Length: 327
Length: 249
Image (cartoon, rainbow over all chains, first blue to last red; front, side, top):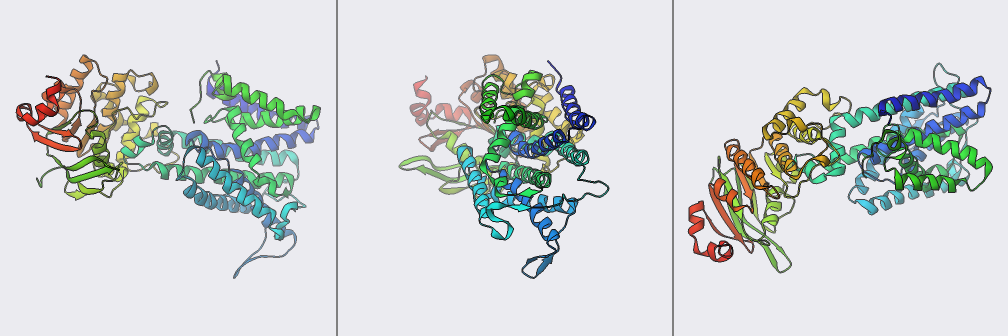
């Protein structure tokens, strides 16, 4: 069995090596695929904070992914039409600056996550899953009917937004940027998990009565985890929209929420690299098997079934010989 | 009893027609072990739930060091100095022994909103957790996951987590439950010394332990306290003999 630290380093090296190889081999589409995998991994790292440490099975994380996407879409749309955004007395100019868009995505997702979390965390188990799903669907239908920003057709952004010092139109540079954000999120996840907050949250998943008995409020711990989790997934949404230069209500769809959970389960729930492995496998299968047959999801389902039945710790658990946490 | 550390006055709780707690007034004085005994279904667990804050009484009050905490949550009572242990161990089973003790130390510190620095590098937290583990003799098992502990060790860890809180009063729900004769004797010896730190409200089925430890005993039958007194007084009490001790004598 492989030590988890060694395995994690290997996974990151392999992840970075693929687009570098593609650059050398002049296969720009592979770089785009790797970027897509890195962004999905980032979204799932966000969900893994709530799901893996806090045990919160959110089937509504597409809400944050979509919010991040629309934060980018709306700001860039106003920038490219030269029409400022007017909210009541406020007049906000659009922007093509990624750092500004990212901060907007983080703040918007965190605020909405606080509201959704506050209401959803009164429930547990299946009810929590259903209420988060309902909030996600509410935003989905809102986006469909929001004609100012394309409604069902979504918004196209003609030129990718910029980042100081980089040319984001060059695929390998944009990959480098997303990979750096993914690394930062992984560092955050690792730090959270071993911090006092992580200790309390991890215990709140397993024994909430104990956490209360030592004077800590399990519901508040979970709410804060949900807010951080939603913010990270929202940031991923902004990057995803920039990758496609397109935002549409499908970013809010519950299928996407489900896919994020699937990515984590494939890689390993609560494992640092679980979302990375899950997203890489997902994108690889989607590309290669999807090229052979449109029924490629059957193969994905088979892999998922096998892992759930025979390897509770996902791929990471299989390779390290350690079962993951129970949610 | 104004010097009581923990006190209930006229506590009542009904579930439909069933009076689970009926006008219970108890007090826990400094330095004492006050045992609460009673046959199965007497309402001990319901009473403990009201004392610890998990259940809101219909009437009556709970006071901790003279302050009315009846409306306060479990968390607030824990922060005010009430440490409880659970009848069925409520520990984070996937976590290590150390992590469970550190959780108690974290609760006592009241500072869980620290997101970046590892617990392992927080010397104050670590020392407090390890000190509690050493007192119950679990220091060598610090890195063992709780799921791998024996039943007796889990009971010890329950007590260790309560110790990390350095509470004003302990409420212990059957700390001897499921311990062998040996483990029970050791736990009895340990609790004997603990009363000087903080008084213990002890719910226990093990009568040898109760008679060895208790300064006072209260007998709960059908939600009512039918007698409170020293071990000798309780043994002599005819009502207690009829209601409770009688069927084992």
